[in-house]
Image: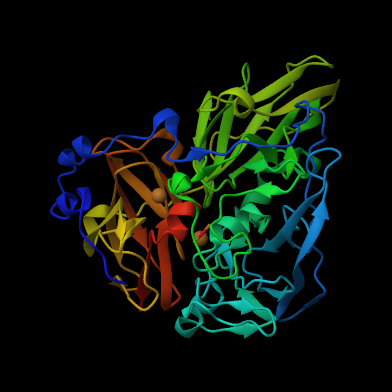
Length: 509
Ligand code: C2O
Ligand code: CU
Ligand code: CU
């Protein structure tokens, strides 16, 4: 791919470690977003009238000495998201969100994905410590039988026809993971249309803690969408069939924001809760929207991050969450009287996007749960022991004659390897950003060392796999890759940026 270095990119080409000059060149996106709002044409429901759905937990088709086996069929389905209207989705087992997978740490999990959709897919387990061949590299496609490859992408990967087994050793600690589509150039529209679900890892350490459990342990996938008048998802794809032509209309190249907030696929839902503690597994499954979540009168006691338990709880009045990030929090409704209603707000939103969901307290109960002051031990990756430092600059730029998003001035190319990393080495990665870029790294989690040379934000605590890098900011993180050799990705989790080439390949050996 040839890259024309015109506009500010030519200037940025010379920027190295000193991030200071970065600032004057670009204007930070307003209201905490690097993205554009798409409005619904459908009649929208009154908020807090639809009950919160909880995605069903998948049952294995077989379990044995070689692990637990699941089969998921990717297919289209018509579902009711807005009351009274039908929405055609691309769904894992025809559902949005897909079924929740639950794995035991250390127990091999094999998921056979059957693709009955009209388009290719690739499944990535986000947060998974996964061998390369099962990591959902964007050109490792599962294509429908008879698929014609117009892009030439298939030549860069392994193509499976109709089905593929994804093998997850799950040698990792308990954490809230999620699986979603990762097809080259089309991840944005395909996730938007429904290809996302939870995958939880459980282990003895997490189970032994007195945190809220079972019906008081609730996954919440927060995602914004816009709808056509008839209830169809509204998305500004250049090619609505997502068969041939990638990309979105120019106005939306910064990212697509919807005006409807869905939680577990329902618009501004309501959940009945008892006056007790609840563990909420918050996931921002949006294409591009950042949220600042708040529950007035109640604090979020964070117990876990992307990569599982924190060393000790961190209390937040409000929690900023970027696409791809997860926060496990405990909220306590014990002081609320029956009938009380508490609304989860989005302080970065306005109008319809300023509210997320509501909790309605039903009755007083006995509650034996609590949040201990010590949760886990987190070994620290020592930056002084780092084998090397790498720099990754996330900026807007031009790809040929159109706009796109670049890392270190280059567009993603699946035939190019951008870094060679030795397994077991600690490295420092400096991630630099012109606008909002939620930066995600595959294979192993990392620890945030500094933000703009200052201490990390309270939301950076613990093991992370996605970090919310803000305009004109650089973040230093320590990372160590282990166990699996091959090709892995680092990319922006604003899915429109990802599809417009903001992705890099590193090779572990
Ligand atoms: Cu959640 Cu490479 O993505
Ligand atoms: Cu990932
Ligand atoms: Cu980005």
